[in-house]
Length: 407
Image 1 (cartoon, rainbow, N blue to C red):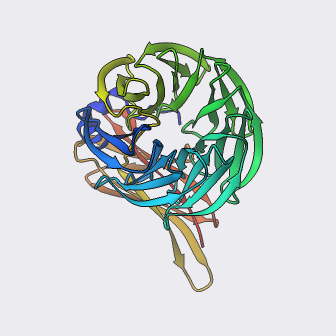
Image 2: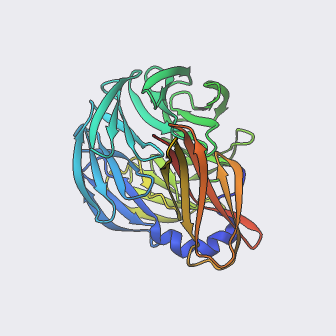
Image 3: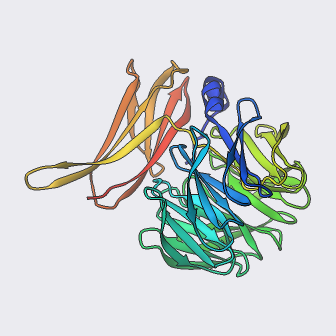
């Protein structure tokens, strides 16, 4: 999507709401806990007890659950975010590493580095429903925004496996650089960025062809990677040299670098994209960086070995796949609903994007609740919707939702 997700003026309107909603989950790989940072104060506000050696974490799209991978415990802990309590433990494969929740929230994929597999968890039942054989030492997973594909890094094979999530079959294997580790998709779903630790490069995969279309030299030991919410830049950490590189996605060139803590291993953006949080593995801290000028504004002390951190998702938008049953046919349709944020009183128009294409305009007027429906959809169709607000002539995304129709 080409528009800026949250422009500077919009941050002024939304900051109190967004910062109050942002929680940063930081697994401590040396312990059995996850540290929870309140992004409004940059302080640790709670500690969640999980399994042995938690390493990575991802959230359900609604932000209500966190899925924490326990590397030595070979399990996934399911955490209720509202109470900061783990309420389920799911056995997975040997030496699990990366985790990713599907955009519709129905499935959780876990890369089992020691087993060469991906465990597929049904989020409704918290059980493993399938195990997919992939390459050697799979480490991280990224879904495309629509959820149709999952991309898995095979660290010892120097490849990426592409999984069709409707069948859980591998539909492509993409050669990349040496020791691929971090992986992230752009918001429009057109590109996948992969960090290759050993050769100091980033591979850029075109998702339409599943081919590498660019290789970017970035410097030694690139590890965790994240795409900014507006899709214009990619941030990645350098594990040994203690800095972050910034890539411009239009030119695929490194435009800047900035220092962080000792042995940075992963990073994640705030929901509005104004900050990035970097876990510094060797010093037990998280660097808080303002993305406007890439300066560190705070350093939060967490556990001894912080690893793959994540930020709770936030959205004013919700949606559901629905159906109407008539005498002769059944009509499938999607309904999207949202409310005007209470901190904003100057929205003149809402714009609805479907799969990054402008679909409809709704004049705000005096209503506080809005509904958009798309009718006559086919079965098993996946649609991603973005809702933006026009505030004083500037456009900002207030939320998104991905739905799959089903009869």
